Image (cartoon, rainbow, N blue to C red; front, side, top):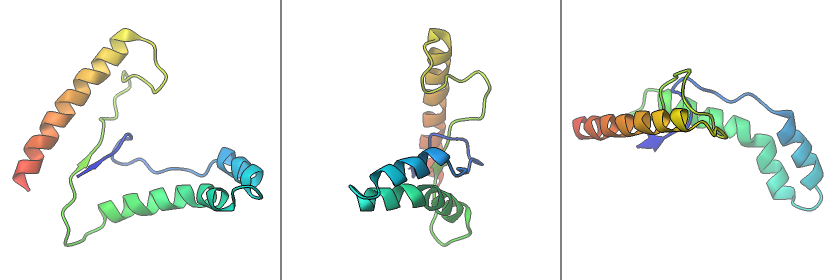
Length: 101
């Protein structure tokens, strides 16, 4: 079972912030800097592996792609409550799907 925080068809795009942080940490924390530079590619490779045809069975649990879901920094109580309820519903569906595997 893989639990994701993004919708099923989400892939990461490269970010300049990662490159700037990597440049800042390159002398002090070389391993961390290198990890930042390859983070996007590792994530996309993992998602591609999940979606590829393989003998293993993966249950991928993703939030629905709904416009009225709360964002990560949302303070709107109604949106947060709605997102929580959708999360519960998604979790119950994942449990049902798990038993089908």
